[in-house]
Length: 129
Image 1 (cartoon, one colour):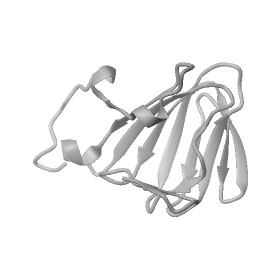
Image 2 (cartoon, one colour):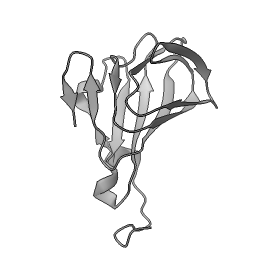
Image 3 (cartoon, one colour):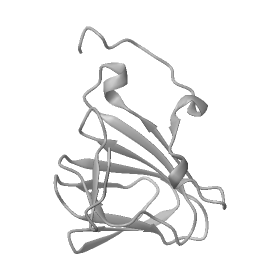
Image 4 (cartoon, helix red, strand yellow):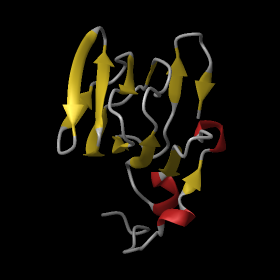
């Protein structure tokens, strides 16, 4: 553990809300940027409404999805996985991927990014850092 890492409690409301990902139907995306806390990983907590999900993208590092509620279809470099609450999906570094909530209720999952600051590249060449 790095010297700058300390035990912390970060309430849900204090996680960074990525406004461009909030939907009118109650979905949301909140982020903990690891480097802000002396960590080597970053974490996203997502609530995805039925039929929704991000556009295809990739990261230079691995990502792990931990499903808490609901179900989704995860596509990783052309391979599809149907996952439900309790499952995990591993996305290798540089793999193009996306997911869609295929259920009738909210899909809630946590995405662990093996990087202190999340960075995404989309198929159209745009980036989010």
